[in-house]
Image (cartoon, rainbow, N blue to C red):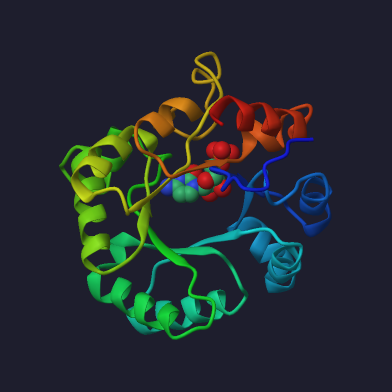
Length: 238
Ligand code: C5P
């Protein structure tokens, strides 16, 4: 067992499971010093706010990854409800625009918990071709940087981006802006098979590029021994 009491783990395990029972099977093996936990659309839709509160009560820092994207009033209310669950971090889509992000900021600041509020830039599953099909004719990196700047201007705490873009964002937006990076794959062999992710990076390279936290789902949850895999990554980046 890793003794990591004073360490703020950089690893956020994505609990991408179909139901509470499957998620809790993994959660019961983990401890809050080893990782934080991310609850996204699949699990939240299946298991609801009760599961979020249950996991928060176990002492885990929870990133509620519901990627809100709607009109400002609706997003603000949703963020307030999410914040009241006691989560550590939550997010919206930066492409909702500055007024939407500002409304979210104000709503979160009115709550007791005041979780970190971050914004998704460009999904890590998008490659350049798919991105251009959306009608945006810039390189992905330029759009990520553009959205990250808008996010900072709106007063949010950071962004979700690929670790490929972390270096340039860190350089331009400073050291106090959180960069949360999914699309992490374990080594150069697994970079070949990266599921539906396109812009993938290894844990160590992501941190070297300036990532604050690494979001990891399938490389851990679908490993033969998820706990051992997580502990090995924890040690590797310690
Ligand atoms: O299994 P994998 O490590 O690819 O999981 C990545 C997690 O990060 C998923 O839960 C996915 O929803 C989330 N995510 C992402 N790209 C973003 C934002 C969140 O992959 N831009």
